[in-house]
Amino acid sequence: MQATAVRWAPEAMRLAELQPKFLVIERSNMQRREVDELTSAHGILFMCPRCLGRPSERRHSVVCWFAQRGVPDAEMPTWDRWLASGSGYDDLTIDGVISVRGGCCWSGRIRAGRIVAP
Image 1 (tube, rainbow, N blue to C red):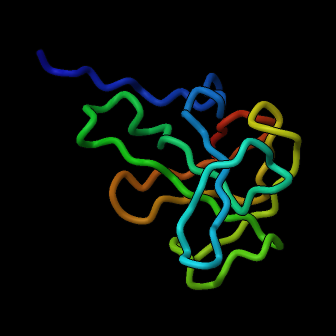
Image 2 (image 1 turned 60 degrees about the vertical axis):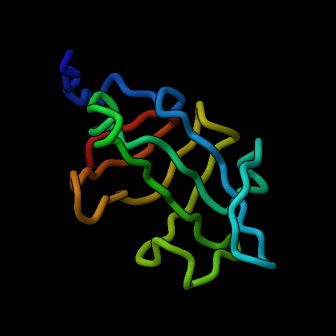
């Protein structure tokens, strides 16, 4: 049976639906680990809203590193850092547009725990 793609509906998408995980970079070996709190996180990883309904081999995650959190310049992806505010997934706001370079080319914003169009 072929999987059916789900059309991305940004006005209805909550960040919590995208399996988000706050990340911390381990300085000793540049590996990442999950943490429960925004206050100690260096960034966030979540499933791409555009690709969520696609077959598993075509899905991917998006990583956003936070500004002013000590993220090394060399940490991939290297091109952007975002200011984050809120207390968790349900009210997280990231200042600026998040853009996937290549692949599906999704772009959007996180405002008050919701994924919205840029």
